[in-house]
Image (cartoon, rainbow, N blue to C red; front, top):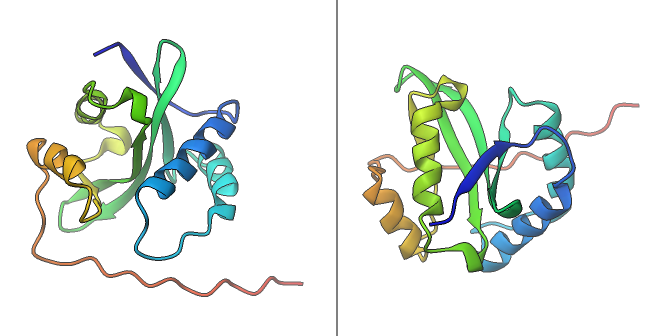
Length: 158
């Protein structure tokens, strides 16, 4: 594996590259529900401007971006602290199978962003390679299912 750096995005210099990788992720691994990709740019801007709400981690090898992850913290009564949700993780196809994903989770274990006491993530049923990686790192499917409901957009106040 080549040396990979994991850095928190603190400005928008690499926003176009992140946006391109986000689109590639959803083209490759279709979401169960429709995803409004027009929100991606504002999502990137929000996370860079509000790092206490979440972070974008850029994966770089030799100075070139090769992936990213979105980290979203939330308090868990069950876990007794901050559970860090890896909302998205993507490695460009030409950089796969080099241990980048495994290195990223080592980075999370050692650095404990948001003082996390645990990690959570989702994996699509068809993404068997990713699931094998996650299970080899200690992730387990829980008995409870996660249910989601999208709320209608708020009307803008005049």
